[in-house]
Image 1 (cartoon, helix red, strand yellow):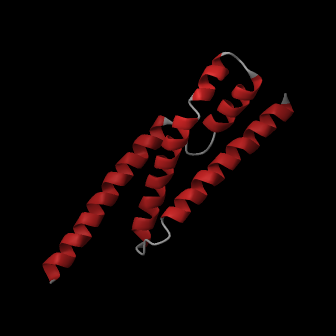
Image 2 (image 1 turned 90 degrees about the vertical axis):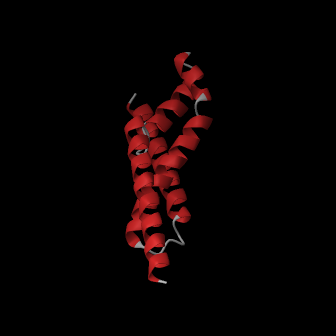
Length: 112
């Protein structure tokens, strides 16, 4: 059983790295450092939500205790960006990011 939990940990680490690298690639052209951090958190929540949609089918196999589906679901559900709390947190960060972008645009328009 130790080997099973080890591979679940490795699988969840791979999903965490995947989501983090997608988020880093998405914020490549943002110049402001605070906006980069906010966008990273927002994109990681978005990518986690998208991947959870595709891995929802493994939930049925998990309920049936099918080994492969159980392995896939446990590995996916234990990654770093999983959970409702993180999705709500990334939504709040996204709203803050949008407000910051509107404020900087408004300041630029007012200075002209």
